[in-house]
Length: 596
Image (cartoon, rainbow, N blue to C red; front, side, top):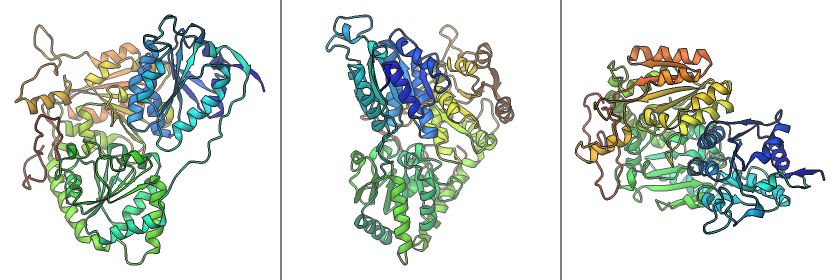
């Protein structure tokens, strides 16, 4: 076996696994591996953003676009502490990357050296990360690195994906031994399926149903099950409801694709969910936002409605709703199995559900009549709905859209229609500000030939504005559309709605004048060496986006959006013990009404 140091072994393992990038920030704790990365710089590239949080979000977004993991590299102490939030974001949404964190030398542990976390257990940083990763490895000798690296990759990718940490004492980067990588030894793709007995029961439940729906989530996207689910949708002729991270798996232009459900879902999705007599949930987890806080009658009506719940993670089955039938299975494998079973069955096709489809079409027509006037609303500041509609009109079908957390995300969840899977990136489970702002850099590296656009709030952008400098530095033609409403808009809307219009701490004002305040984001971009534009009229928005894409260089578009127009809630959401609010347009809403 060749003699190499730990830094060389880690780098070689990444190369052998086909990892093209390490996203990281240097520090004294990880300088020992930098020379090994320099040796292999033609085979693996170190990209250094200006903050470790950004490195993690970039790695997360890269995986969501390509379903191939990359690594991050952070230094001892504060550098690695900054990776906690993007790891929590990735774990919450079943996204995978390898977080290589440096630690103090093993010979100095428990002596309180510079940046050691030692107060309760020596060099205990891996305990900080354990709640936000699938597994934290902490090799103490250089000979332990080959096994730890192989197990880290296996753990990341087998079953439900998730981030993994390998915490490396500084000396292991430089200590030498006879080492060989164990890369590329994973056993297949591990796609479990349903039994014949379970498939027969699913078919029987479908045969008995008259108002069935499918509900698909991120598990369907991760399994790349879109083609098979679309075939299943067409074969049965039943409506499909999608979580934000499941959007794009089935054709968004199909009248049976109803979009998202919950407080900020569409009216047809919520109405179909609460009226259904059978829900076939595939790779979806029934969180509070997609279930109207589990309050019966607002999005779902379990247990009166029967539930077939299919997920690769057994912990999700029965977590919030006891299923009529729970199946531990991969989404794509299950969809293919069910299609084969249906082809073999006589008399089960789209025919029994014709009346149901007609009813759903009626709800869709009502909803379209309600929202349509707002798409072309020409106002200053811009109507939020018109911003979404304009983006839908001018962005090409192959765009990768990265959405940050904020009120703009609520509007895009409700009305955006992605043309393909893995192209609408959301921080859904953890809702982390900065994910979209930073993640677009990783998305652009994952799909260099495609336009990558981040729609971000003014609050989230000012948390992580250094991204523009990184894009300029590495010549990444990312576009940021800043939803400028001079507020933490999503929280201000909650505050207004729950506390009779009183507001504190959620709007951006000059302290002395009381006038609303934000930096000039376009000027900020130009100061970084990027393009910057300001849009205050709807007529200018489409041309600005088209020009930004044509430039093929980093660009920030500062869009002034009306912060006093709220997304129309069609379900509900509760923050106990505060009472939940009734939908603006929902089960109790009379047909008709004016624009949003």
